[in-house]
Length: 81
Image: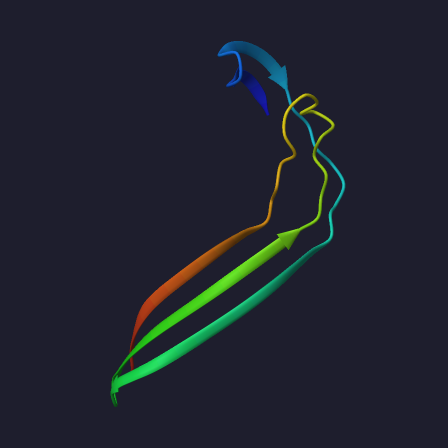
């Protein structure tokens, strides 16, 4: 990525070219559920956790570590035909 970035510690705007390459180990854990409301309709839900162990400090020296891990959730309505 190339462009103008803001250092939020000093509010200074600076131009930078940020590059990344390589790989990082990661792991995912998921859990889901389905609740049948009627023979044709159900509610679904799923939660995911992604752990990514990469270290992206190279282009971001002087800043805090970037954490790619996170939690996500989805919900849905299932209609059977």
